[in-house]
Length: 219
Ligand SMILES: Cc1cc2nc3c(=O)[nH]c(=O)nc-3n(C[C@H](O)[C@H](O)[C@H](O)COP(=O)(O)O)c2cc1C
Image (cartoon, rainbow, N blue to C red):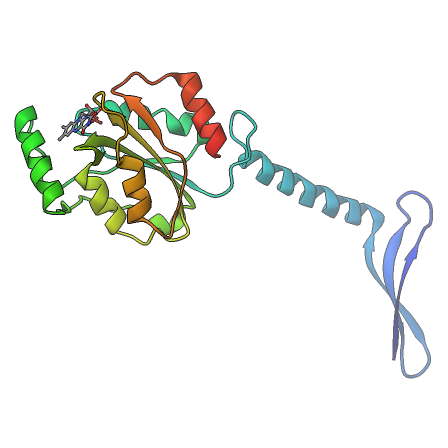
């Protein structure tokens, strides 16, 4: 049995692809596969789907964003929350607040002392919920600076899942002392992740253009 492929052209709409099959008795059968219009329709459908996929992969500034984005943050008094909430409008992604089962005291001096103790004891407070990290490739991670590093609930978050191979883009808000060890400690805590350049903001003094530059630089 012999099989050959041929494309015939019979004017517009007449072009078609077909198999020529020579059977054992010597007869030749032609099996028509797809005419020109069906072929065109198929090409257009595939192209439209590909364009939609590409469109959903670019952010507002036209920068290519590979993978699914999560914006996870902890915030004690709202500063980090206010920064985190701006990120999805720039890059898309889902926002997830990290919450502890045991709330931190409302009294500032009490939380300062408690956080100092937690840091010294390498304590990891229990979280209300841990998002399913496996669904995301890129994680924007926000924390207030607590005693020169990231807040203890962030330690619970980072210890609560496998972050290897994930891209972590950290940001923090601080009270005047800058990021200090915050970003380098995240890097040390997640040696198998790609930790990008962090963005440190004094309390709520975030500048939208500066923030977009940071995001587009890291995208
Ligand atoms: C327990 C604790 C420790 C802090 N340690 C620092 C610090 O080491 N350096 C600094 O600049 N600010 C420090 N701050 C100030 C916070 O980082 C700053 O107010 C931050 O913007 C608070 O973010 P939030 O509102 O999201 O909780 C500390 C605040 C608290 C409550």
